[in-house]
Image 1 (tube, rainbow, N blue to C red):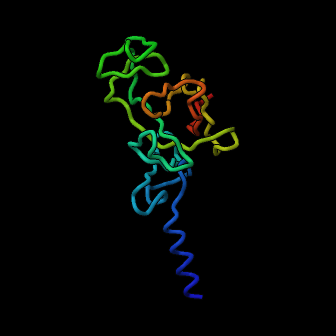
Image 2 (cartoon, one colour):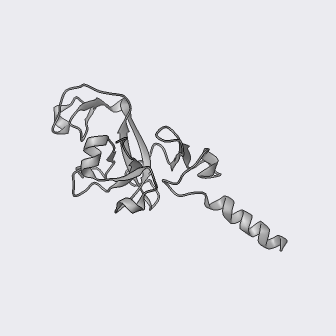
Image 3 (cartoon, helix red, strand yellow):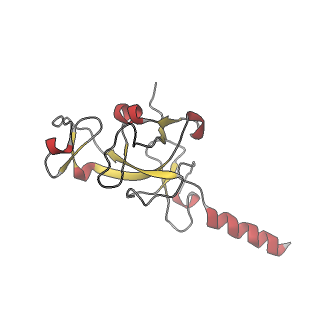
Length: 156
């Protein structure tokens, strides 16, 4: 009995939650600090990894970049329209590279893959509401290459 209780407790501590699960504090996501609880977009938190790159998220997730702040910069259609210290976003704006923040976000195929209050953000949703996947070098983000992910649903 005592051995099974210790085994169950050990499994519960070691597993943690998956990317996109609800959380209150970062230790809800992982006891070893590899995942954090981001509460900036919602009161029920989002287990994530901050500072990811295209091949560093767990299997259930994709690395997504967001841009902190509001920008009324030059419009762009391609990266060459922006300076070296800027990025061209899906929204068609040149933004400072320093404004980029990356998070591992839960992949989804349909709305039911995401929890309540979240949307399965497709390519058009990325353009309308932000977030775009960080893909391998040389791969352009477009409707065919951008995997959808669970993000806070915009207020209606």
